[in-house]
Amino acid sequence: MKCPRCGLINPEVAQRCDCGFDFKTRRVEKAYFTQKLPKDIRTFLMITIAINIIGGIVALRQGHLERILIGTLWSGLVYLLYWRLVMKDNWARIALGIVTFPWGLFLLLSREARLYCLQK
Image 1 (cartoon, one colour):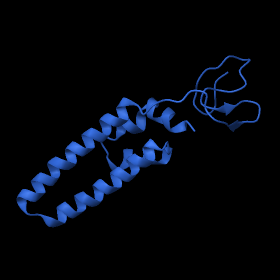
Image 2 (image 1 turned 90 degrees about the vertical axis):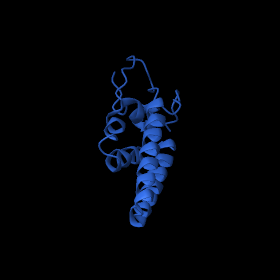
Image 3 (image 1 turned 135 degrees about the horizontal axis):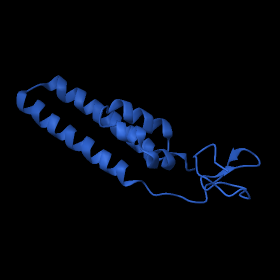
Image 4 (image 1 turned 120 degrees about the horizontal axis):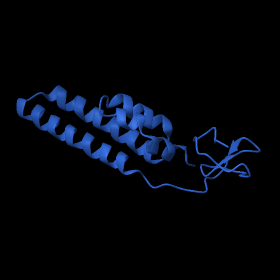
């Protein structure tokens, strides 16, 4: 049977999915399997930091203080969302994908990142 929460195919005799979904009670319990933070998410953070640093250096060299301020606020938002993503909040994955569009699309479309966020 297919889990309605994560999409994993389970044996017909399964009482609970690896993601923690209980087929009898239709509620989420603690997951049997816990996944570490996917490499895709760490790579995403490194790309975001690199783009931020390059943008900050360019803005600093050109003397654009308002761009530096906006960049700092944006960096704080991305860091906050990333921290919530590490805490397995799926809304943070979606928000990061939107805030960092277009390279955030892989985070939105990543099955690994979605399954990581579904763990409790």
